[in-house]
Length: 170
Length: 401
Image 1 (cartoon, each protein chain N blue to C red):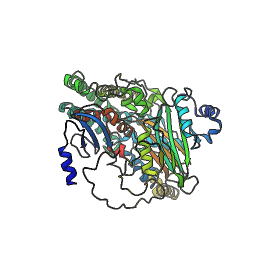
Image 2: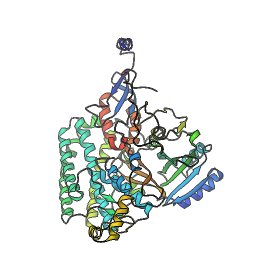
Image 3: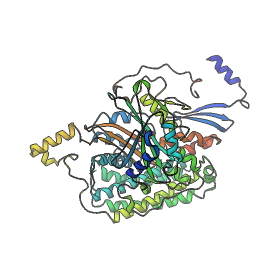
Image 4: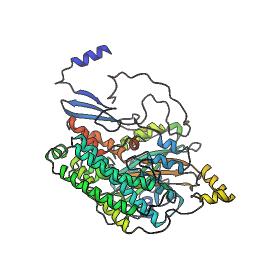
């Protein structure tokens, strides 16, 4: 293993100072919370600076804390192959203004992960090259992983698609 | 629409790109998946991959029941190697609970995970070679998988939907003859793999169909978040079992095979070698299998013995509370990665301290493989789509959840 979570957090605090809103360690996982406006810049530094070297975006998802403000947390798990350490980066997003910057310019794996996050939570990724739904169909109403989406909810039947128009929509 | 159709048929096929929709139900793609292709003759210019046909709402369903009730859902992610999913999920929960499992349970989990990994690779390679016409190999590999599934059935009671792990342990201990059965199955599987190796590895037809196709550089593979055999075929020796060992993997001596070209042939070789390494791990684990219990007895997480439930009011209440309210997992969040058959299988679980998962996110390795598939396919021939797709080893249950 590379750096321990506490050492990594100390270095991150030192490097980013006020751009880290909150940082903590739980069960050996390092977590930092960054503001939305500084997110791209921090992510870029996390990827490019050799002491961090987070070359792989392992996963990107969101958690819906219904009833709290801000409501959503966009959670990104990064992993550094060269230094063998991991970090979880969170960006908090309010419900009425649910967007974050897309990470596709930094990591290609963000592409489908962000599409899924939009599909499931309705969080927009600004700058995403292909912002379509991915697991659900385009006519689906709502975002199923939101806590206020009822499990039993039914969806209206959709029109049959024109077979010629199906396919490339980009 | 009729006019559109007429217009399309009048297009000159030599000047225009042809759009072809392959799937979602295509005989050569095992799994429901759709490729929207743009073709120049037989060459793929671009490919837009559509997934989601097998979406069951795994993550939503996990939030509805208790933590233990989520275990059967994990069986249905990668249904070729369900044990690894069980282990990954339960390791995440155990880390939140701060639970340490007994040594025998750890070793059993390692053995069963490696048996599952061999099953996974056998299925992937067997099906991929069958699609290239090597039917014999497919039958040999499925025979090997049957031998291993017999063991899984003997230990867990089911072949696929096994739900083998619990918080703090596993459901069943090995029977007295399990170690011998595993050893004899491994001897058979080795012999079968030897035959497969002779039939495929230096086979001219197979080599020509696989080598240089679907290649991806190490930098691209990392950027795409590829893990497992796909990343290792590109030459990056990343294996979760080595990088961040869990369940005592640091105690076993095994190698991480890597490729050089990152093409389909390397992916095949990496998987073939990994099966041998898995067998080495199983043999070492069987030699060092300790005695003792296979589960903790912590009453906060583990059901009481049946005679306690029937004869004792405390036992009955305790049983009732655990079943109805679920084990109280302390609040917090954890990301636990394990090395699945297709790569890094991660579980990100969030607990709010009630008996139910607040959020249970699975990081499916083949989802990221499918995301990279469009790029891998650029410039290959239509006939190469199927083996390239086969080497991703997409498992619908895991990719679409």
